[in-house]
Length: 102
Image (cartoon, rainbow, N blue to C red):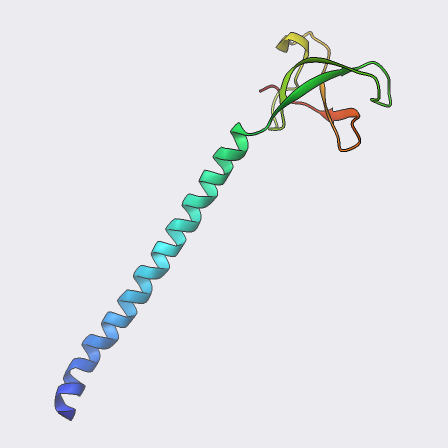
């Protein structure tokens, strides 16, 4: 019986090592896939209302267009390059946060 255990011991050891390698690889693949999925969701979820501020404090704002929180070109009135820059509301309901083109 001890001889059978010695003969199967290397096979068992190889099986355990391979099992660990396969599980580790699956965990890494799952983590990378989750990261890309999260990034894709963040890109589409950031549509906010864009406001035109009428004063420096950002307290008097006029709703103009939709903007995004995703970094890129600035959000402007009519999304035209020559339009005035639009801002999104911050936590204090002031239109001071830079908006980006959706």
